[in-house]
Image (cartoon, rainbow, N blue to C red; front, side, top):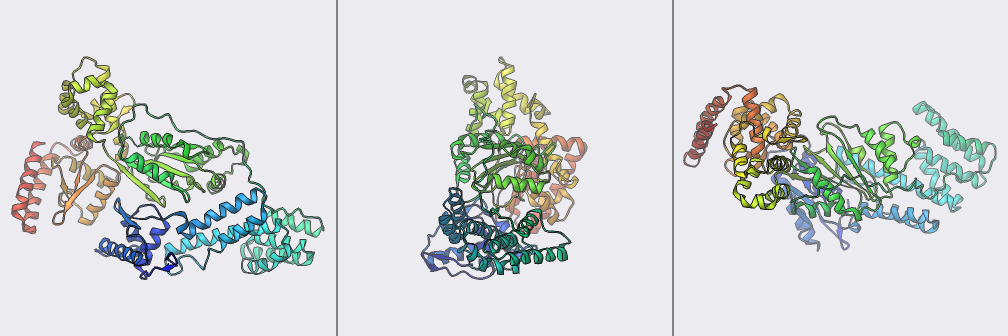
Length: 628
């Protein structure tokens, strides 16, 4: 891997530094989580200090770039990871794709000579095997991808050469390629065509015989229909119309899909996220994937639709939308692809049956387009990578849990609205005068709703149905009613149903821990409290906590160097967990939680040797648990 700034080589240490840099470059302009870098460097056996060592690697890389004359902020720290900022011309991979797009456009316009030169410029960017300095499963897969990519572009260049009449010149290029890759039928067809058009019919037939023998011996298969047809034409001495000449790309029935649902007219808030998401989606250099994650009712879909409409002019080839019903009845990817292909004008009879074939056709159709694709409500258990387009399109998806299986993902985690935005939303639903006449009661209502947009909308619907009910009375009812969730349900605005679907994704042990944590009245829950309540080893408890955080049923709060991280609940989700805990764990569960935490707090305080700093926390534990 060669790195240079203005022609000056950048000195990069081997192994860890090189691996970290490679992963950052492969995800240029996207935040790469520290956990991803750790997996790339150590795979399944990271040391305890892995995150510190990654930090050191990044620091050394920054120093190397600065020493070579690069900007100090070339590698940024952002959202629990790192991002390297590069323009399209800074990375050979992007320069290659840009040159290939230019060559295809020239070929489609009929300027074959210029197209040949542009293809050669693209292929010249390959200088040996990509990531050859980094052995390992990750780099093997990436190297294989780029080798196949190089080959497909090389075959396109050969097609252009045949179309331009360079038959004799290309024979010398094609013979060693066919000898090395005898099972690539497209190469064999190109060599047969070049030989036949150069009046070397016997040699063209010999190429077919050798290819057929190889395919039968190694795969037990006859050559494909296209190669057999070419063979018959050459046998009969018929003129061949250079069938591999690239034609102008077929554009199906002109369709510009606009499938996004209508935007919410009373959309409120998220002013901090809107420009960031828009910037990520508008970028250049290949398909981009942005995910909005959060608990049910946090407004992910409304935000995705809002962003999609705001960016309409940046995606002139249209917008595709699919509700994947990930939390109820997940829609299989092959069905989604069928709908997308139909929206893009592909005739039904041309849509293949298999998932891989449909995905390949979708990538082909989208390769020359700039589309925005919104995938709403992804299921964690189903792989949706087949829905990712080619070319310069962008994907915006929503999910309860982080869709970690999608490569190159930029994720934004969504919680409740900021207090002022939540107040504005309630005012838009029940009237500004009514809200600001009782502003303190309105603040109590949005706090009881956990500042979740869906719950606030349900509260607004109930208040609209009760025009003579004071906000104070409604706030009192929310804060004292045994089932706050039931009060915040009206018709389809059912926050309880949304939260319940997340619980269905949990294992029994994870669900059990979540309910017990809900019976605590501690605002911040330390790891030792979770371990006490889980009846599991610390490592297993930590894994369950990670799952709850990933499902947005818990939030990581800032910790301190001594006590470590703590966890918090959204107030409405805590209420939900407490209700489930009282129902499923029995009437003595609260007393059991109080007893366990009291004893564990004393043991932890004694072992830590920080009696003064933790006596207050122990008192809060006992007092809070009794208050339940």
